[in-house]
Image (cartoon, rainbow, N blue to C red; front, side, top):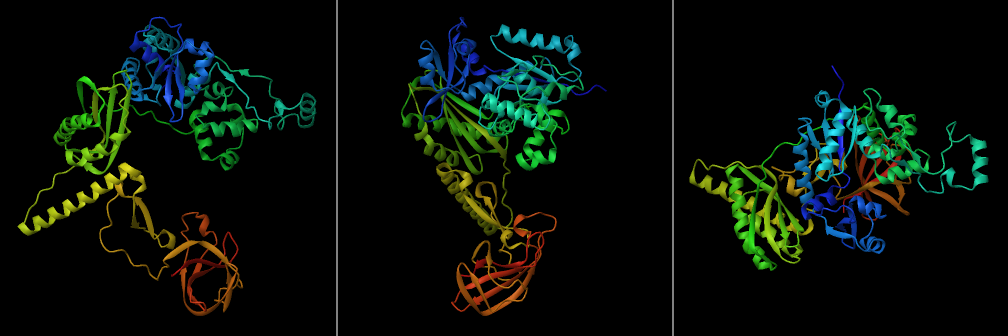
Length: 553
């Protein structure tokens, strides 16, 4: 059975070329840039080829770009429109493989196992894709390998330059005489070759032959492993600039210093760890729109439009037995740009009176610009909602109805507060299934959890009102409770004590806070009236001793 083959399609100029198609600009020699609003300034999010030839770059502030290229054409970025365009490209890519997945905001991933021979081989398949994209005014870069990570790396970095991190820690940035002495002294990095001056060119071939993934990735920069820029910078300071430099290092040392994420990305690219490709499921959007005869810009006009859109969306949800958990309102402006706002609900809702107030609270954040000529309302996240039937005695039915109304009132309150401060900021406490004192309760997001049903479970012994991380207590290192001790630079005498309560750590977990081993807890009343929670740690990975962990008020 043939091995798995993966094709990565990267559209590096997707935003700019999409707008050039919409604006019907035939001349590609005009520099064109798509701008992204960061809140403080506008930066370039995408460029056409002419803009790159003019010396502009992605991430550059607009004022600097206009100073370098006064004839630059610009438009604001529309993330939703770009996502819809990428979805269209995904449907187009199904002619080459039935297994197509979205990868980020500007790339596709195809499983072409057993498909390439239908187009004359992998080289012919890449040529066919390039010709199709060129006819439609799109730039595309392809990479084929045995793993998704390797295909992603080849599409973006094969044929590029392996740049050096400009830091004073690198030996190639020191003075010439100092560098020569260092090379003679160390023969460079434990027997390795000294780094070349300037940027080294990586091979331009974007197809890794079956079973040759490692050799194809070794010359590529470490950024090809889909690492964060901070991680790439740290590796560059140590001279680990190429994937081949990382592949020869001990995995345990890499994981200890840089985390398991680096090792996981390396294993995924080399095929040691599986990385499945999940195709996007074809879902019908739960959305409705309203096209306006004239552009509007007043908040009252938008509210009047919501009075028509929200009931229509709720009817669609009820027909499918769903409730909205997140709703997005998109306002398409007259100048071709779009603004959007989103709200979340604590519980799935399909009633207009529960969705409309949340949208109305957020309308102040909507910028109408030169006027809004179309509004679109979409339920971006929906969950099944089961109807409740009241049966039995009339009194029981009324009580059940009252409980449901009370629950809805609390959910609506959480939703309104979440529209202001965020749903993740509203939490509730639930009992924790652990005998460890600090794990006796867990904090959950109120919008995504149900209230605890029943009384709060009683602990086997009293627990303090205030609990903190264990603090050292100066007392003899003996398991017997001392008559006096020193804590927080104060001396205390024991007036009354109750205990001990022995608590063992969770042996199946490596909790850094419990590496001191088994603990004997005491409720100690001091001569100053303070009731403290002290324990003696018998010692395991850490030394034995006395600690204070809480106060009973």
